[in-house]
Image (cartoon, rainbow, N blue to C red):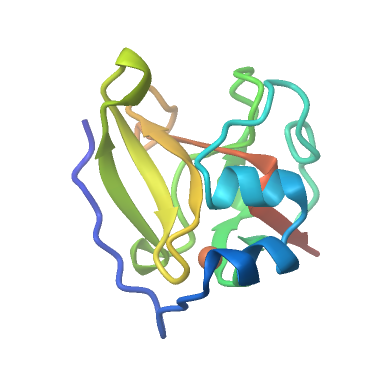
Length: 138
Ligand code: FE
């Protein structure tokens, strides 16, 4: 597995769960705050390759650049690298009978998805990210 990143972000954001519930859509809340996974091939950005950046749907921090996005065929947006190592944090995740590396926004601790070491290109990484955790900015 990849080295665990412990990004500190810039200015941590702490909000109560009721604040998050008011600000986020039900799907965004389920993914970012409850670590839900959207159904494969259902997300807004699964097959979108428009240029720009992807920011956190919770706090607006820049997380991924469109240059790093690739079509993995797995049903979720996939990136070969984050926009910066400081933008994300990683945690060991042993839920659902699997050993995975969870990817979180380093600024608001929102759940984004998981990173796997079966990606293409120089990093060999595949950041498998829920569309609901992202907002595209052209
Ligand atoms: Fe965030």
